[in-house]
Length: 467
Image 1 (cartoon, rainbow, N blue to C red):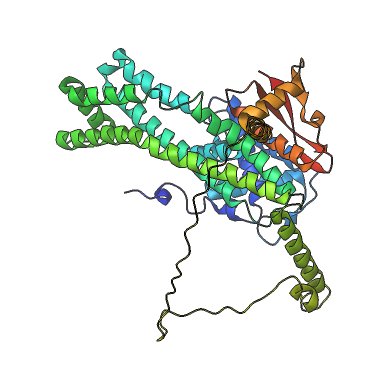
Image 2 (image 1 turned 180 degrees about the horizontal axis):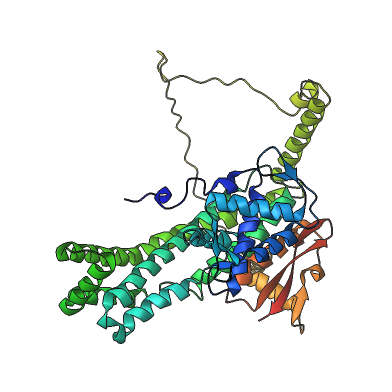
């Protein structure tokens, strides 16, 4: 089995682990982008030098390539970076027929740079695009003349890519959950929530559950894989293609490996429900935690949670202040002890030698009281109280009705025009954002990179659009 460094030079990652790793990372991507207009991964060395000089222009920081001599000139920096990348095995020189010196990118460096680009851009995956390619190739009868080369190879690779992308979505939700800490204040919780909703909730997750629902083609794909496995003619041609592509001489081994690939692919489609269920659970848990934490931190202090939070925050602030002033970080003993009433607790241990007494007291049986019947007027008042309670809930239906009433005849409404007179009104804005992705609603929201201030709160700016 080959090792990665059987292909890559031993110093390949050295530029990306040095103290100038950000410079080298930018330089590698700049050089790679320079090759886009060329017919190969090779371009005149002076063109590369000019691109890197433009990058270093205006940067007066000195760089050392040998830990002895430091340079600040843009051209010297560019030449030094090229030399270091050549020594590490990213690029090499090639002399053209007209004696022109070209910089050529090694073939093994290309997939590494592609991965760097994808990580930086955080490109969204079109799940239905992947699964529709799998479905289309399996349904195309013309491709079955060479089933392995034209169908099975692509199906296996796309299935692995689909599973990998779903796992990445799963991990990305967990990463956002891990960022939710108890040290966050209300503003940070809301910022983190809107960032999550922008990156995950309204993009990858919503698309996976609606337009890119990956279960749409699944049954058809599994049927086609079964048909391939059950067809001797297709399997015979597929085995020949496998032997040719994989350089396998033993037909029995080729057949076993091919069956294994197809069964693994089929199994992957059966496992999609488990992966999606875990993604759903994490998404719900994140949304619930974010809303509950925001509601707690935005509490007005009139309820028990708000009062306890206020007391504990005040005590911790005082302890922090006294600690910063050089004291032992303790508040006034009287002030703290007055907050609590401590009582001694007595109990019988299970290990005690004393028998635990069991007391029984027979009480007089009370007479069964006659059931109280509400009058028509009391029943009407009770129903009205229930209706008022339901109208004040932050349900999807109530939020939708509230937004439609706000919009009126208007086609759009900026978030800054939503009336906010209390913390409850501000929490309603959070629910407006949460329910915006529901297709049953009569509105949607358009986000931007800007921020808006409403009263004493700041939040990402968005517009409500009538749908």
